[in-house]
Length: 223
Image (tube, rainbow, N blue to C red; front, side, top):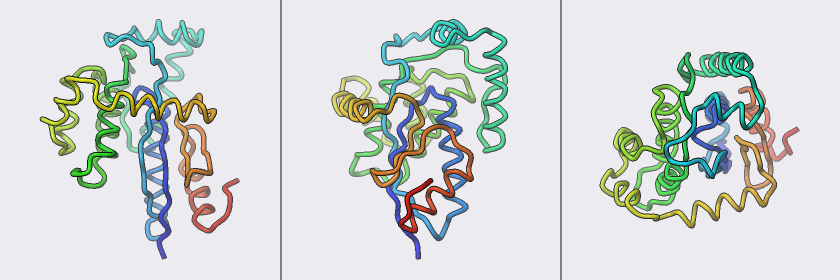
């Protein structure tokens, strides 16, 4: 008998550990096929809400924000790249050039979740495409052209998306969701919330997600 579990995946499209966490979660769900079915929703979180649309050089940003050296950044980038490769996600070997504002991307992701006419699963497809655009191809998630290409690739309505980008539709809804999770004490992502009760923080290994989902499905609290 399959148990349906609601999962809110709180994350940012400019967060490498969010890509790792998503692909690990999906691998866990694949292992649990026939046991667990996920009602998966992607919720907004901005790592850098004050970032201008043109972004900032990634090395300068990481040094400014975390005090890391270029050598430490290179080592971290390679570790992330290898974790991604193990899960089937490709990080560019040279890494990211810049960090960008992601608010508009979150508006489109919110639309993909709430649009009444969209087929199921398209928010998840859009999330994966936006992660690939940034981390695999080095494209800007603040670029309307990149966003519309992602919308087209996954089969969402490009004309509707263009209208959303032309205004501020869903801006208030996204900010409300962001405040909700900040007020709940979430200050780092990914944060995976299961059935509005259980929290798994960080880009955990597949086995951690698998064990937690199995425990929730069987009525037990995850360790």
